Each structure stands twice: as C-alpha cells, then as structure tokens.
Length: 492
Ligand code: HEM
Ligand SMILES: *[C@@H]1O[C@H](CO)[C@@H](O)[C@H](O)[C@H]1NC(C)=O
Ligand SMILES: *[C@@H]1O[C@H](CO)[C@@H](O)[C@H](O)[C@H]1NC(C)=O
Ligand SMILES: *[C@@H]1O[C@H](CO)[C@@H](O)[C@H](O)[C@H]1NC(C)=O
Image (cartoon, rainbow, N blue to C red; front, top):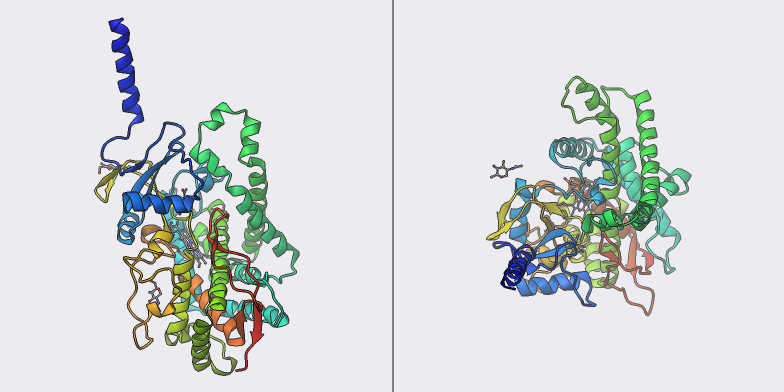
C-alpha cells in the first residue's frame, strides 16, 4: 500500500514538474502539453490580447498548441527585442517554408541566405528609386491610369476600383522585370487570381505549425486535405512557372553592363559569384525573392491606400487641408516627384496617421528566439515565437494623445511644419527585419495620394457614412471594410 502511495506521489510530482511553467518565463497562459492553453471565450483574438496586456503588462506568454508565444506591447521593448541578433529569425513554420526543405528569399528565410538576399534587394530598391528616376516615372504612369479609371466613375457610388490593385502590381512588375500590364491583360488577371487564391489557402498551413503532432495521428490524405496541401502546391508551382519564364526571357536579352531591372541585376550577381563555392545566389533563390516582392509589396500598399481613402472620406476637414496643400505645391496639374515631398508635410502627416490608425500588418511580425535570451527581465527560451501587436503599440496612450482619433496634426509642430520622428510607430516593423520596401511604399503612397486628390474629392454616398471598423476576418491584415465612395472632379 505504502509503495503505491509513494509511487503515486512521485507520479503527481513528475506530472506537475512537466506540466508547470518553468521559473523565469514571462507571466501568462501556460495550459497543457500538446494543446497549450485553450481559451473558453467568445472574444476575438485581438480583444483577448488586449485583455491579457491589461492583466500582465507589456510582456506575456501564451502557449498555443506546442508553440510557445510571447507577446510584446511597449514600443521600446519591441525595438530592443527586434534589434537583437537572437530575436531576428523567422520561425521554422510551414507558413514560411511552403513545403520547401528550407526557406528561401527574404521574408521567410534566415542566416546567410536571408542576409545576402536582403542586402541585394535593399541595394536594388535604393538604386531604382533614388538614383535613376525610372521608378518614379512608372509610379506616375500607374497613378495616371488610376486617375483615368476614377474619371470614368465620377458622381456614382463605387468601391475603390480594381485598377488600384493593377497599378500597384505594375509598379512591382516594372521594378523586377521592366514590364507593365494593361488591366485587361489575361496574364495579369490570372496572376491576380492566383495571388488571391494563395492568401485564401495559406492560413490552413498554420495548423501544421501549432499542432504538428496531428500529422502523426491522422491519415496522410486527411491531413493534407485539412491543410489544403494540394491547392497550395498547385498555386505555388504556377508562380514558379511564371517567374522561371520571366527569368529565361531575361537571360536571352541580358546585357551585363546595363542591367534593366532586379532580375537582370540578380543574374549578373549569379554569374559574378559562380566560382565561389559558398555562393547563395541561384535562380531558385531569385524565384523566391520575386515571390516576396509581390506578396510583401502589393496587398500592403493597396490596403494602406484604401484606408487612406476611407479616412479622407470620413474627415472632410482633413481632406480640405490636404487639397489646399496640393493646390499650393502642385498648381495646374503638375506631376508630383520626390522633389515636392519635403514641401508637403500635411500630406506626409496624413499618410503617417493612416498607417498608425489602420495598423495594417497584424500577422507579419513574428520572430523566433534562435537561442535562450533575456528580455524585460524574463527568460525567453530558444524556439519561443515573439509576436508584436502593432495595434497595441499604435494605440498606446503612453505615446499617443487620444489614440482613437484620426488626427494628422499630431505629426506636425504648431506651424504645420515637420516635427520630430515619433516613437510608438512601427508600420514597417523595426530592427534587423524592418521592411525593405519602405521607401518604395512611401513613394507610391505619396504619388498616388497627390495625383488622385489633385483631381478628385472623395465622400461617402449621400446619406451614408464610412465604416471605419477594421475587418478582422483576414489572417494577414486588418483590412478596411468594403465601403462605397463618390468621387467628384475638382477644379484646379
Ligand atoms: C505600406 C506598405 C507596406 C507595409 C505596411 C509593410 C510592412 C512590413 C512589415 C510590418 C514587415 C515585417 C517586419 C518584421 O518582420 O519585423 C515587412 C517586411 C518586409 N517587407 Fe514590407 N511593407 C510594405 C511595403 C513593402 C514593399 C513595397 C515591399 C517590396 C517591394 C516590401 C517588402 C518587404 C520584405 C521583403 C519584407 C521582409 C523583410 C525581412 O524579413 O528581412 N514591403 N513589411
Ligand atoms: C512619418 O513617419 C516617419 C517614420 O517614423 C518619420 O520619419 C516622418 O518624419 C513622419 N512624418 C511626419 C510628417 O511626421
Ligand atoms: C547561444 O548563446 C550562448 C551563450 O551566449 C553561446 O555560447 C552560443 O554560441 C549561442 N548559440 C548560438 C547558436 O548562437
Ligand atoms: C500576433 O498578434 C496579432 C495581433 O494581436 C494577431 O492578429 C496575430 O494573429 C498574432 N499571430 C499569431 C501567430 O498568434
């Protein structure tokens, strides 16, 4: 009898040891092995995260399935975390690997491949945008197309036209492959459909990342159906085929001394490093860099501009000030270039305030600890995924006065001039993984906003108001709800 009691006590102790949270970890939701902490609540994820920050402070932990997650809220803590080498890797998730053995490209990869691909792309974006003006020209051209489409729907209630999508994609096509498509082009239409499909399919891959043991207990075909494996593979192969065709075409017309675009420059780099046994440059990597350019660079820009239209339609007094600035700096329909940017502080304030208020990217900031490390006085064990909640940083009243209000003036000094860069703002992330496309995105937003609002005013349809509640159903973004607008032509 005594022996049984003793063994039982040992068992309880061991279970307690394995089930309980090791000391030194941040406070939060620990739960059970394999499944983690499952909340019984009808609050949505974002509301729960807000509650947990209120309960535990700037850093808390939540075991989800087998994955240990740490959530950060304070801007300074996030900045400190994401500047660390130990916290600059992406998690080794299927969501990032997409059924490759290892990751490729920039956004999903780690180590030397990430470093070299990122450096190459940053240099490309710098050369294309700043030095030579060809990219500015392409952005203007695409903004003109958008303006033409809007001119055709003046006075009638419409959603933001599909041409916005086409224009933004074309800027990227121009940058990577010196191509721009018409909206009616079959190839472009198919490309857009594939991108949408990929986004729809891809959220199921997270099942594999959070409940990896399911794969071992489920029949293979069922598991593959659950994570929509075949759909993903189909779309992925299609993209690879697109990009490979483009690369092949570039190879036949390449002039190494005059690279035309990103693909050309990368091909030159492959050639230059072909005798280096440690080279990371290959056509296969290039395919995934192209993937990244389209996936990181298009929906982000499209949704930010859509939010900007929503905020301007909802705030006529902001729009009036913007119109006044445009009319002063760009009289009689002059085309905006980067030279006017410094004379348009109100426009930049509107763009910044849009990015602060919409806090668009709510999924894209996961980093993983590649080693045990300390943060905010707690231990972050290797393998912990660190997630920042952009919303909580952008709505933190320690940094923002009345954060719920849309107020571009908060970015300017009392004379309406540029004031200092603000803390508590990270639409493009921060630290070693900060967005490589920030300057391109800002240039597009600047030129699109200037050219569209030079010609038009925007308002909700008569008797309606703009719905500014974010659509949280998507996995990657806090999109704007579908809103209708009426554009009217302006005299200049
Ligand atoms: C308004 C538009 C945009 C927003 C709000 C945005 C936001 C972001 C954010 C939040 C990250 C993640 C940072 C992190 O992991 O800590 C990111 C990464 C990235 N973005 Fe953007 N982005 C935008 C436009 C673009 C454009 C136009 C491009 C390129 C053409 C681009 C390319 C990338 C790439 C390649 C990464 C991965 C960087 C890395 O992992 O090292 N983005 N972006
Ligand atoms: C907009 O935000 C950027 C990045 O924080 C900053 O450098 C810039 O000064 C801001 N613009 C204005 C008008 O405050
Ligand atoms: C992890 O950190 C320890 C102690 O700082 C260091 O000795 C070790 O090399 C690190 N491991 C990796 C993979 O960076
Ligand atoms: C990270 O936090 C954001 C904001 O709360 C959330 O939308 C996103 O789904 C989280 N990501 C993961 C993997 O938990």
